[in-house]
Image 1 (cartoon, rainbow, N blue to C red):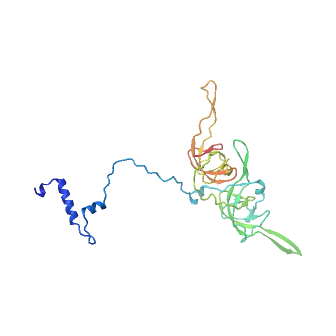
Image 2: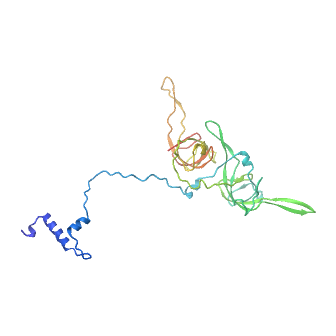
Image 3: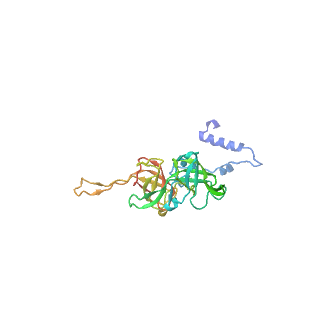
Length: 310
């Protein structure tokens, strides 16, 4: 029987043997069929369901530039503490309202005076008179909140100049000069200057609280409106005393009023379950209160709305 009369499978086997035999020597060794097969072991695969664990979910760090346009820097003070803060006393031209790029005069009331080049910080926050934050359910005063207005940079020192006129000494108070380089609202004579660590909220890693959270909206920050929406800030009635920390992601649940079931002869009072209306990101925390950015909402947020773990 000639080669042409062989079956297809036999011909393929003969050709494979011929090709292996025809392979040249490598470094003085001839590759045999056995060596060829040992180098390439065969493994039979069958269709099957294979389960591989996915990497743990990680919430990426929010960059400062991504959230800073929506964040403000409210501050909590004791009344006596606020009264002792340095104050803006005026500006050139007897103006009483100021904004970005304006130069204003400021004085300290007590303690270390403004001295350029000393230990005094160059940049200061500006705040308005604090108002009481009350728990919407208990009426407890949780904190005194001062509204953030902007930031100013110290340009020249505060000092007292003594001059002689007709043999008499006269003292003249020279206030410090500040340049307002950032403002979110109009700044007025009497607003206060305060310096502190305002960078804690700048870079946040969103995460879920390990403890149960039961918070409520105390106020809508910096606004006289009743309904808050996305990218607005709300104050909450929970703080570090309740294990709240910057970066906590909370679910907003709409407050629902109790209703009477008129279809029941006993007229029982029923309270529908709270529906999720969005998410909030905590960025600033004090002892009894905290502040959160409404990052994703599908309905208006009001004082009394609840916030819980996601």
